[in-house]
Image 1 (cartoon, rainbow, N blue to C red):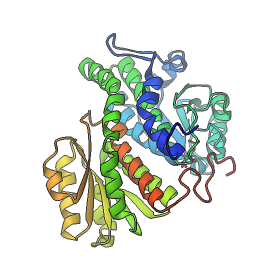
Image 2 (cartoon, rainbow, N blue to C red; image 1 turned 90 degrees about the vertical axis):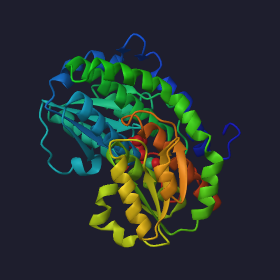
Image 3 (spheres, helix red, strand yellow; image 1 turned 120 degrees about the horizontal axis):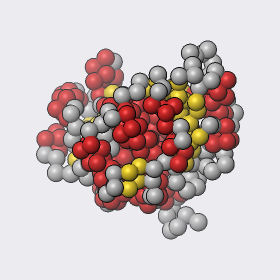
Length: 366
Ligand code: M6R
């Protein structure tokens, strides 16, 4: 059942090239410049006329929502707020009929997310679901939605659900941007094509498996980790830290790289491994200076870089390479080495990788 892998988590990490493809298959026709999402077509005006989009989710799904915030605002020019479902539901939030709420959930059973949906519906908002489990409570409670096609995710640590959620949210953003006319035709076409290349890029990123295992061996006894990223890769830093803490029980924090100097930099010394996402982007130079600041304080740098990178390679103690894609789509590839790093650290520490202590696959109580 684990398909020859030691754990479901590793199997699910390795399934990502094929499930990302399953998620866009029949929905993305790159050559024709078409995106067809059944659940969206009938309700597109709700999105186009929305004052704002509110994304509600928990855990890893909330991180996918944060990535989506950057993508939606950039391409579709719709204001987006991303909310922890548990906070949103108890805050007496301002919700109107002009709001569209997107609920993201792998299991479709998360109690807080379900309650947030019910509240949003009562207030007259249009509620759209991005779920993996067909027929789940959230998929039934939402007005419409798009399924991710990740297949069953057994490992408690969410991996393929995250990348397929981003795939769906990227398609929604592209479709809306196209309908609203807020994206150039060239950018639209380029991203349809780039999205089709993601499975092969993920495949390529997975080839660093052995190198990552060696890095895991160096750092497995650390008691803390810091994860830094900027822009589209800030949520990836949060996700990398969550993955490490939940399966290895090592304390880890994710931060936007620029926030480092507002506090966390005080933690940095020769015992602190810092994972920095430093792929090609508009922020590259700024991330390089963040790396220099860490180095000056003797922090150990593990950097995720674009293949062929030379600048960061010289500064970092270890690098994990990923193939080049656009900055917008980069979270789909930068996530992969971070999943493997936490997996191997947890295995080396003899943790129960697929069923970490105190955690359940779906959190059906608040
Ligand atoms: O099923 P959901 O996507 O609604 O679950 C949300 C979180 O409980 C989930 O992502 C959790 O944080 C994972 N264990 C993270 O790996």
